[in-house]
Image 1 (cartoon, rainbow, N blue to C red):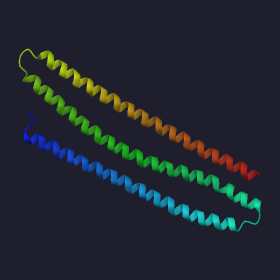
Image 2: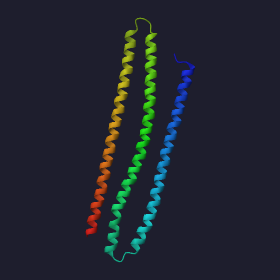
Image 3: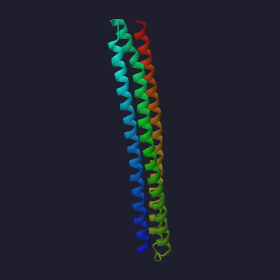
Image 4: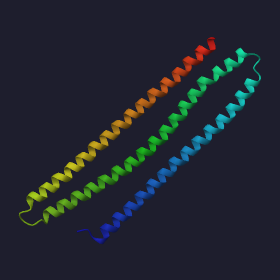
Length: 183
């Protein structure tokens, strides 16, 4: 049987956890806003510089060379922006995951404590029911752990794929720029 103190402690822990997650979410939003402001400022400055350079082009060949020269840096900056965006999202997800794992671990311990307490106080003849309950709790814990491992593996695979795609995109833009400059 849960006491009033245990219920209040659980509510307090849940509220603290909720505020902690909210704080982490706002930190991530602040990072995203900062990243977007920096990217916008840089894009505006570069656009102004490129516009002036285009206006000063003496012929079509110089104009084409200027245009080709923009492709590679743009691809690299886009890749860097995407990397920063991915890092912010990954960090936020990792923080949230740690919080959830901690709460799940605490809940599992409390549940096992309740099951153990119930089994000690169970009337004679209910041993098989208690064993089934313990088995079900253990199976749920194992399923949760398997799910956590699968999510971690999927995240690692997604990061690896992201890195591969980013590298490929930057290399393709370098090749395109080199080809355009040769013309």
